[in-house]
Image (cartoon, rainbow, N blue to C red):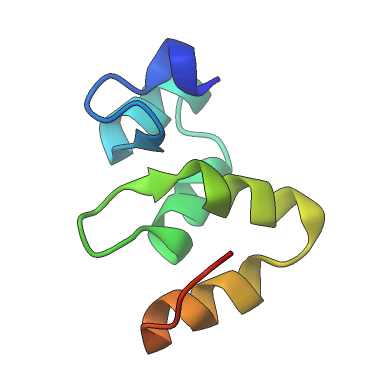
Length: 68
């Protein structure tokens, strides 16, 4: 997925790249929720969305803690 759509940074998606990938589906909500300070959606955030740890991940990002 990232190989095909992430053009700006290899392991992160911009909003436009995400939009092209999903054609505006539900991942736009994920982008708004989990984007980093540089306005990228990392592959870690997408992974955490599917493994059920997205909110913990977002909390750590917002508090400036290291994320593993």
